[in-house]
Image (cartoon, rainbow, N blue to C red; front, side, top):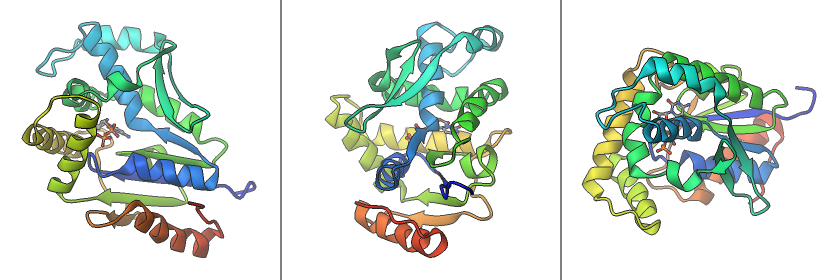
Length: 235
Ligand code: CDP
């Protein structure tokens, strides 16, 4: 750990606030933030637009496999600290957060060659350390040697309400029950797939944030980081 920088891996169920927490940590430490789910979402968005997946989640795997290496998927953080996802140089950040993409992303993320493709990109981001990455298999498969692993959870109701508010604020007309159903379905597919399913790494620390504010979460992590690494997240 020559640079003194570490990797912080954050995994957990859908809509547990992983990305918001990860962004705050990265900003406060001056680290890079990476959203692994956005890559699966970008591929899903591409697959929907090009007819590689139907509304029941059936995928034309051979065609997708052929075209995947030709895609350019990037994540860039702008001067305002906002992270955007680009597909072939077009900003698709808003599109990949739609309910339509959420409905299908876990089918795409089950496919072995998709996971292999995404893993190569993700691993490349960790070479210099100084990284906070959130997802489902970051502490178990992408960075099994990450210095800090956090497994986030929150009650189903809290998670659904948070995501519903978020979508409503963006003008998407979705029902609370529809959002809840989507979260549960994704959690089930993500936890039961064969390759690198969502599960808690043995050495991960659990954070249930059902009743916590963002500041509570930062305070909680600062205790651990200060003690173990002499690091402090400025907020
Ligand atoms: O933000 P939210 O919790 O809704 O999910 P996300 O992080 O955007 O991830 C979307 C989906 O991508 C998940 O439901 C998983 O199916 C998949 N994913 C994965 O399989 N492995 C990861 N490391 C990250 C996401």
